[in-house]
Length: 391
Image (tube, rainbow, N blue to C red):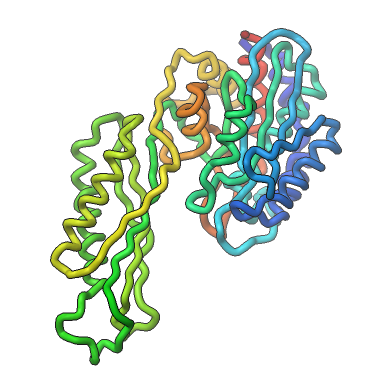
């Protein structure tokens, strides 16, 4: 349990201005996936200036060594890991701004604001001495966002032993405690024909139509998506989604290739090959009558998972959330895939996703309220107190 004295000291100890300054500093450094070296350097410098001892771990990506630090109580107890990614999706960079209590800019919601919040939690625990046992391990890295990254840096950190007894991840999920999550693969489909591009009025009548074939494939994949709603084998819904469809150079050209890309999400751990295989079968069947060539490539981004409500970190988190907000969170499903899926698949360590109620992730309009960043810092600090001392 958390004493009223502990919760009061944590709440009073959070430095709102310091948190905002740190978040702005991180958002102000462009860091598309695989190019997060400069922001990792900035982050390491911020931590060093705060008095933390920083380790830079190559973790299979020398272009942007990961950032690692600790806060040790000096007493026995569990280790709670705060883990975050410093890279952002490949969209035009938006400079940070703070106005009317709102932080905007690239990575504000996904997830530099959350990273700044968990560092504030560490600072508060250090300054107040409220961490009565155990320690905090903090890790931050590149290579998170797919399809540009393949999670190699986090996997290398795990391989090299940079893991706690439980993990908190400040992705933009605030209204549910996600004890279930889906696995996800990204697929890319190429539909092609031999020959060269040709003006529509000059094309032979028997010329294979890659656009029509791509449209048929898209229709069939969405038919599969409707079918999955009724036959998903686990809790939650399996999905197929097509988010990109490209063909041709101009409007009246018969192109030689069309490309599709999307996601396949599944609910049962270990069924990724079966799920992607189903996409491949639909693609081949839909394209068969068009005289085109098709190929499907895919990458697995993470596995499905479930966490037991009896886990110590779940209990500690709910205690902390209730102390901070007055209520526990309802248990539910994580709608997206994040580093928690990787932790659970590779270590079995329970990983809880909880961050600010932020908006605009994977768009150029990211924003988060400073109040939410303060709340997350408070919940993380209180969770650490409730969890780490219990070991």
